[in-house]
Length: 290
Image (cartoon, rainbow, N blue to C red; front, side, top):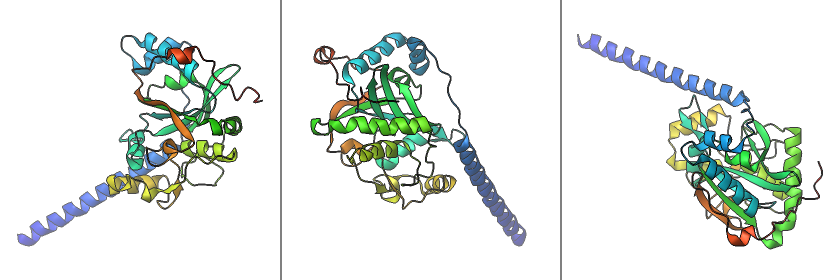
């Protein structure tokens, strides 16, 4: 009898192990498939409609217009936008934005570059779908966006903005694929790497890369989850990466930047200040050619 029960326990344990292996394999496969998909959201022209879809609730139109007024009166070419969103992977089981923030001990999961041009206020960045050039109104209306902050180059460094914008514009025109393996110097870029390399191309390093396994929040993430993600994306944990950052590391903490807007809930847009409304913003990209 005892041998029979021991045999049943052994069979059960083996079955559980096989189930776990199959589940892990399925998650990895889904992650790889999802990474290879490229889905573009339909363009919606009306700003209030975009923002109502993004945040919902009463007063959506007012908040949309408030963000637009703030952007038009405050932002100038070369400003950096730091955001946190809700980008999910592994069949929606993992919030990658939250994971990225945890890994880097940062409130942000993404960074983008502002360009004020003759035809409007634009934002350059790169996401899983590839490089983007979005109107600020479209960028801020992304329904996955939850937090936004901004920093500006200090006066001594603002001359670098035009060349950095040109770099991003070229990447966007060529539609350079997103760097899913997070490796440096491979001709592809992820979001923080694109912005960092744009300014380095212009002669202004903003931050220094940190090996993934030395990121400030690396040890706080479940070892099993880390392994699944690293394996699914073929990511080397010793690979140095650039990241949005916090007050002591990453792009956010760059000595070349000064505060413009602290972390702000997307549902509570700031009001334009009288000083900024009455001050003409600088257009350092006016001479940029397509």
